[in-house]
Structure formats: C-alpha cells, structure tokens
Image (cartoon, rainbow, N blue to C red; front, side, top):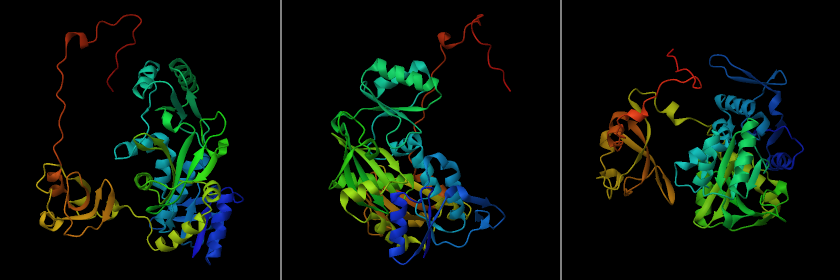
Length: 406
C-alpha cells in the first residue's frame, strides 16, 4: 500500500510517527507538503500535480491540514476524493470541525452535550448574550484560535463586555460560552479512530492557568472513559464526518460536554500519557478501509427520479412503535432502512425482526413521496397582526432613508 501524509511539518512528532508506523507494517509512506500541490480539472479527468509533475498513484492519504491553509488544504483533499483515493478524513469533515461555530451548530441538533454557547455581533446584544449562557464568569473564544490561543476567561460581566467589544472592533469573530465551573482547569481528550475510542487522557492545567492544553503547559494522564463519554466522542466525530478525531470534552455535572472536535489531533501527548501505539492503530484502520473510498450517499442514491435518502424519526404516538421492521409496512412502500439509531447505540443494516421504538432515528432509502408522508407535520407559527405602534413613524433628519427596492 502506498500512503501519502499531507503535512507541512515533516519533522513533527505526529508526522514522523505515522510514517514510521506505515513503514513498519510494510507500506510505502511519503510526506508531501500540502502547499506544493496543483489541482487540474478536466471532464472525467480529475488530477493532481506535485511540484509541477503529475502525481503518481496512491492508495490512501492521511491529511494533516493546518489551520492557516484550511481552504487550500481541503481543496487538495477533495481532489484526492474525486480521484477515488481513500482519505482518512474527508474534506467536508475537516471543514466542519475547523469552524468552531459550524461544528457546535451541527452538534446542537443531536443528543450531544455542549456548553451553552452564543454568537452575536451587535453591541446591544452582548450583555443579553452573556446572561443567556449563565452570566459571569464566561468563556470568550476566537473562532480562529487553536491550541488554547484566543481563549479568555472573563470573571465579571463588565470585563466580558469590554473584551468582546474590543475584539469586535478588531474585526474578530468570537463565541461566548458558559463556564463549566466543575471542570475548571481540566478536560478529557478522547482519540477516535473509526467507530471507537482507541485512547483517552485527562489534561490538567498547572498553576493558575484555566486552559488545560498540553501546549499551554497542561499535564496529561491516562483515564478510563465512562461509556457515556465514549459514546459522545464517537458520535461527535461521526456528526462532523471524521474517521479520526481528537474530541475534547468537559466533565459537567450532567455528563460530557463537547468543546471541540479536532481533525488533526497530535499524537505526542496522548501516546506519552497512555503508552499506546496510536499511530499503528491508525495505519491498521486504513488497511481495513482502503478499498472503500469516501462517497456521498445523496449523490449515489438519488440518481433514480423520485428516490432519495432521508432520516425519519419514529414519533411516540406512531403506529410503527412496537412493530418489527419487517411488519412495519415500510418495505411495501418501497422504503429500505439502512441504519437505526438509538440513544445508546447505532445499528447498521438492521434485521427485519428488529422492533421499532419511539424516537428511533431511521436512515432510509426509498420513494421520497412515501417518506415525506411519514414525516410529522410542522407546526406553523401564527402571524401576529400589525399594531399601530409597529408601523414606522415619519422620517426625521437623524434617521436613514428607507430601503429602496431593487
């Protein structure tokens, strides 16, 4: 097997360990600087060039795309995907996880614990936003920060407001997060490969520092994860679309709270803390998966007119509750269940004898019209009648002119 490690830091610990692990397992491994690629686009001929020469054939790539080249790096990974090369992490997964706001937006619609978070721009919204996440102390995060840089703990409302206003004036986008006091100065890093957590460590801040990142001087120690933390880490990585991820979680009173999902997690801290050969585990996973390049179900399964992929949730008052899939009538409607998801587990390709329960999530392929009929009707918000005080008054000299239609 021929593997390319996309990295601009060929001498870094993680890059060297991955290359060594691949070679130890009898594979050819090369480190290629991501910025030296060129993308060539022609009909039915997606190609890549490296240092102006056409790239030879590779079986798999391990992307380690730095934050400073996210756009170009994900474009290169996307091109490998179009060429049918197995990518340990997809371009879409890297993009999802690199954007802190987008990743939390994606997690928020699932049964995944996250710290209360808000995002505002108008100055008048800052104080209400801080109150909304629980008040001071509050965490302020730059959207572009990494390794603990750009993370600020504001102890009072006034300080928080001043910091956010200053960052906004400098054209910086910031997240405002509630402070999980019971986890102050420590967090959990779970290293996910495929559908399991292969290693986990607890990072503990030193001195008066509240950030536990190893790059900030935090100490790491081996930890045995509770099943709920394992489930949360794996689900968070899957929601992002990542096959390898470092999932950072706070230990809240009511369970794990995901702070961040990292698509290029470092190996040094966690291999040192756990004494596990994680690089070898990654290469083993690639060996098992290399025959199955990344594909988009929506692109592959919606070729036939009127058919597609959809996720259905079984309502608690549905006739489907208590019935086996084979007796549910779904197959008679030309609907096939590809995956069944419950709070505590994911069941791929469930058998016909599997009994459906309330709130089960079913990933289905079939007739869109039939699946649409199974969706619960959305409750429409009633339109409020306009009152006299809602109407704009006469324009004064200090008010801007009305918008003109274009």
